Length: 231
Image 1 (cartoon, rainbow, N blue to C red):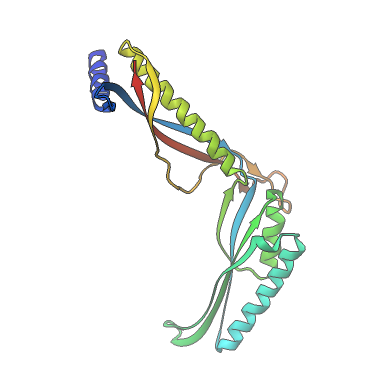
Image 2: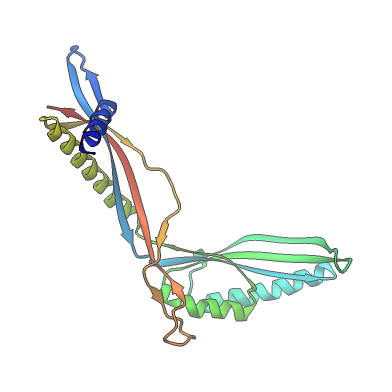
């Protein structure tokens, strides 16, 4: 087993090591490694996608029912002291469709709204209120951090440290030293936040022993590839 591990390490070094040539023609041995940095963050805001749907025999009836419900919902949201910039209509539709079981045509009206709540403690009262106001569809709930940019910086720093440590480990195994960074390549790309359930929030209207919301943690990840000179 030990022999296999040594052979694998040797193959890995042969694959990741690189040779660079300076302008004077001097060969500079290098080692290329990948580093990863992870920061776990507790969300401090939540984005909720709400929807209202109504159907009726006539188009104006379906639209009127939807408009009345949306007006009540927006009034409630305003009463929750949520900034106007954190409330946005995403989609409005009105169309004719058919119920093949009843063999009857009807009109379907729908509208969706996205709301950002920057105080997660308001989640329960908000959800109860919008449902009572007329919301009959919840399309999604996502947790986010308002400080994600600073956490991304921290993750990048950790990724560089991880790469540096790997280079040092490999260089020590070769009886050499890892020198200065020669080339740095950012390997990060956008990905939806990874949420790790960690604890629950208790609902204001629910039994205090009941847990109703898994907030969890957001995992911010950064990847980097760095080539170090070997000394």
